[in-house]
Image (cartoon, rainbow, N blue to C red):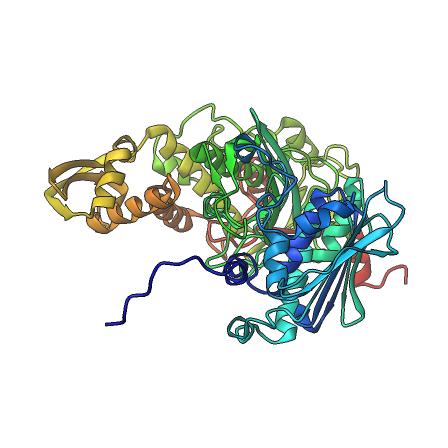
Length: 603
């Protein structure tokens, strides 16, 4: 055994280096803290200069309100801040920074220089240190109003930390991604990023929506902008806005997911789960959605003091926030084609898609009649409105047999002109030509009808012939006790059978063939993690999806023009009709400009 060491106070320098380990993980952490301080100081111009991935040098210049000469020595002390005064302020944080640890932590592990000037001062003032062991007296320096901070030789005095840094190229990649994230959240701020003397980003401030789209394109690419659906929802004090890509634009990795809470960039498991649930039934297997979303709520409703790097938050009403985000984004994706704007409202490809505009989604269509049976939902006729599907407009039916040269009577997907190899429908609309995968499209239509019918009939329980005895942990038991009503609503009959044992007497009828214990454990795990569970719904929907797939019109089936047009009208009125149940696109639009380019017309 090791000998006992007496309890003692750590030296200030060592305590500061330990604190720095929580705040300063890598060069990007330094840039984050400095940019957040600059934004809190009211800066609208930020210049970031980096050498060797930030390991050699980081310099951040801002035009904020600056720090007075007599406050400079205090600014680099631990727990010194101008952003909170009382404990009550800690529960209503409006700023990005608030702990007063950033400058002290950074200066403890680098060669540090701070220069600043306020509008009231005739000159700026500078202080510096090597590892915060000794600070120079404030000395005059010629700089404009604002603050300039220079960080050199990061971790020069903590070699154990420095050896864990990656190659300069990798470290700069983290800084580049950080600046992208900050620039997305602050479009009115000018960002300039240089690496080894080369300008990587020079983003001018923008004020209008068109400017924001240009910044989105510069940072995330043209493909994202072409697929972007602008969203804006409000519910009481909650507001959600931003852009989400249509499900057909997806990624192999979660590398284009940006979520901000009151302007603070976060990676919150609750929010990520809510967004993922909103995209359910529309994403191709294993693919990731892309989005830039901003959630705003009263500061007292969110705790940002959860993680040293301030990358996680905790909500006072987590379930409320989760449901609001999931429901809002799900409604946006589900908007029927016929409810969208009539101008440039198609899933476009090519340059024309960059001009696509979207409005706030309309309310979901309400069912006015129920199919008589599951078989009715599978039928390939035009039933009464169900599953978010409405009768085709009489004027569309009339226009289908009339001269359709005029675009005034054109429905969004136009009218069928031909069928290719029993697989695709060729249609003409106001923009040009529409190609439809008839099986994928009908699969979505049938699936939405089945889901609607199932929702109206409710979840039916299936008693088990032999109840399943299920041992549970203390955590699982507490979760079940807290969410018993949820299990009942989902079709389960579960009761306590001992101190740490549950008895499963019934399960949802459609899931009666699934292993009961594994199903309940999956639901308990999700409830514990997110306060909600979509596991039952996902499994039931998987069965309905399979039924829809087998019940949809198959390839190589010849359709009449009337049948093809009926399919187009059903697509226009169906929720999530842009993708089949497996996330594949159901249709594509080729406008006249794209068709002209294919044949080099006008060139």
